[in-house]
Length: 206
Image 1 (cartoon, rainbow, N blue to C red):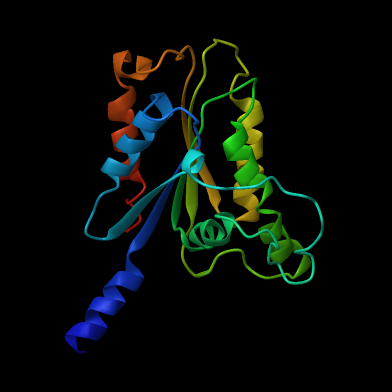
Image 2: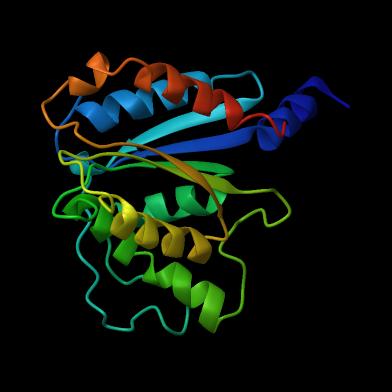
């Protein structure tokens, strides 16, 4: 095999790790956790990328059924390329704080715009994954300002449903209640270490 073909093969075989930053507050608690997860996933065998939703233009789903025949959304914005990233990812980390018992508006808008992928899977009967032979896993990272026992359950239900549409196995969550003030997660005794270790765990199947 030539060196160029070998290099191309290595790129294609790399595990694609995609992190989604869903908080509207930059460098806040979920951003810090996500950064540590991604740092733990750094490896010669992995390709990592973080997408910051608050910096993108993502309109809400119109429920216009424009995607129903082709699986292509008619709205031209950043979801056009992000949807492909989601389909190509082998590992997906969604990081969103809890707002009023749910995901942030930025995160929910992105998820709702995956209706086109729902069409691909359930109407057109195709795989949402570009490489359907690869194992795909995802995790949910979150913080919330209260101590409610069910604080993360509504968000987790949405994330699990979304992962199912993407043909991604829900592989767990890393969540912390009673974290509200910006940077408060750094005072937690193990949170950042736990996040780094979780990133390392994502590569164990390599």
